[in-house]
Amino acid sequence: MKLYGRRSMAGGCLAILAGLVALAAPAQAQNYPTRSITMIVPFAAGGPTDVIARIVTGHMAQTLGQAIIIENVVGAGGTTATTRASKAANDGYTLITGHMGTHAASVPLYPKLAYHPEKDFEPVGLLAGTPILILARKDFAPKDLKEFITYVKANETKINAAHAGVGSVSNVSCELLNSVLGVKPVGVPFNGTGPAMNALVAGQVDYMCDQIVNAVPQINGGTIKAYAIATAERNPSLPDVPTTTEAGLPAFQAQAWNAIFAPKGTPAPIVAKLNEAIVKALDDETVKKRLLELGSVIPGPKDRTPEALAALVKSEIAKWTPVLKPAG
Ligand code: ASP
Image (cartoon, rainbow, N blue to C red):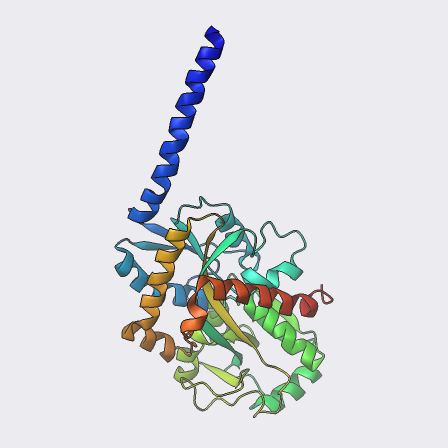
């Protein structure tokens, strides 16, 4: 009897505790955020992911009334950081700015990937589309894309292409280019296309396929050259750079994207608050101007919801899996 009584008291306490926790959860979400938020960036500072994350979270922090601290966590084409983010507490205080590589191409490329982009994350919102460019060091011999194609085919064992690790956007998009051209040049991995760009500017590597964001200032400053942009139309930030179709390689089309994700199970009201802050940032004139100056494509209203991002991740995994799996 005594024992039963104790148990029932303990049971009663647990029930009260569970009730308090259940009550506390919505209140926690309502007051969110009450302290600073960590935004993991899975590549080095100065690359497209880092630049886009800093521009958008700078404005989100004003909306949310708390600092958003960027933490660059590098390695394994962004998958080291993404694994860490997938295991973080799902309380809205640790987020990640992922992209087409970490949240799509990684699935077929890493058979032992420690996370699944769809199962281990809550999509929060798309930040930007980022066209891909074929870039080279400024003194690389070929003058235009036609010469580049001939040169790469003739010298594939002697030249190298910088990228940000297996499964990164720069890696996957240049692999796509290589398969279109039927070549296998040497790849040189960096912790992000920030440092890869520095190596290209310094003439230490020959060429690179990169998201537009950190290329625009370098192309306009004449420190590197751009052969073509792999989208249907020219980009207003680089009006003189021809499309791959104009330059004679229509088969190479590539545009990446960056987006914010939260660990699975992050309460829906917190995800909604974060999404609202993204939308506000994307509508802000200064943020818009900065993103457009760097060649990004700002998502339209329909593409800004968590549901739209979930659909994008699903379709990108479906798109990249057959392309990347046979290549290993
Ligand atoms: N562009 C990425 C960055 O460094 C890396 C990549 O995916 O290529 O932000």
